Image (cartoon, rainbow, N blue to C red; front, side, top):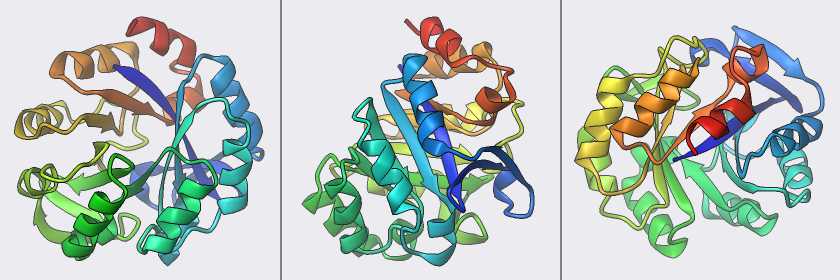
Length: 237
C-alpha cells in the first residue's frame, strides 16, 4: 500500500469541500506549490490533485498550477476534475501528469471512456464517487442510475491504472471511510482499488490495507493536523 496526499484546487488555492458541497469550503493554503513541496518533504511519492473548478464546468481550469507542481518533478501525480474530452486528457499527460481520473464522462458515455482507456492504457483511473450504492457525477452535484459494484465490474475489464472509490457522505468528515463497500469493491474487481474519503487516523489506513486497498488518499486530516503524513507513510511500511 502507498499513501497519496490530496490537493483540491479552487480559485488557485488548496481547499477542502465538506461532503463535496461547494458552499462548505475550507481554505487551507494559498500556495498549492508550496503545499506540494511540504508533502514531498514528508516522503510522499504520489500526489492526488482535484481541479474543483474544472469538475464544475467540465474542463480543466487550474492547469497552470498543476503544471507548476508537475515541474517540481518530486513525485508522480494523478489529476481529476472536468476531464470529459481527449484533448484534456492529452493536455494533462503532456505537462507531466502520470495518470488522469475520469468520473462523470465514464458514467455518461461509457463507450468513449472505453476508447480512452484503450488509447491511454495504464494512464486512466476510474473515479467512482458514490452516495450509498449510487454513482454520483458532475462534481458530485448529480446522482446517476448506475450501481457502484456493477459499473465497477464492467469498467474493470478495461486496462485501467486503478479505481478510486469515494463515499461522498464520508468525504471531509474524518470519521473513517466506507470500509464495507471498499471491501466489496476490492473483491469484485481485479483492478487496483484506492480508498478515499473520511480517513482520519492511522487505524483507518491499516484497516484499508487489511481489506486489500492498493493505496489510500488522505486530505482534510493532513490539513487539520489530526494525522501526520510521515506517520501515515511509516505506518504502512
